[in-house]
Image (cartoon, rainbow, N blue to C red; front, top):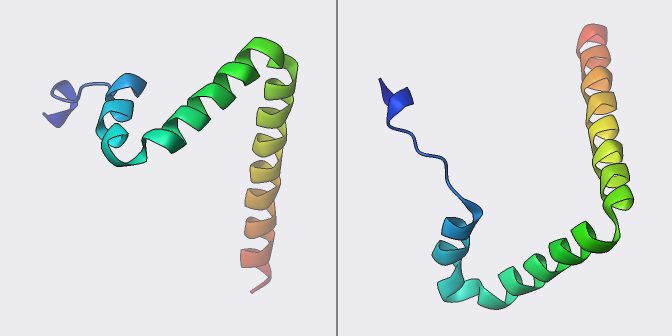
Length: 69
C-alpha cells in the first residue's frame, strides 16, 4: 500500500531542505560534481568502479571470515 504513495525525491528538493544551514557545503559539492561531469567522465567511471570493486571484495572477505568462526 505504501508503495504507491512514495514519491521520488529530487536532488533539488534535498538542496532546498539542506540549503538553510549548509549552503556553503552544498555549493562546494555541487561545483565539484559539475567539474567532475564536465571534465573527468572517465575518472568518475574509474572512481565508481573502484568503489564498487572494493565493496564487492569486502563482502567476499566478510563471508570468508564468518565461515571460519
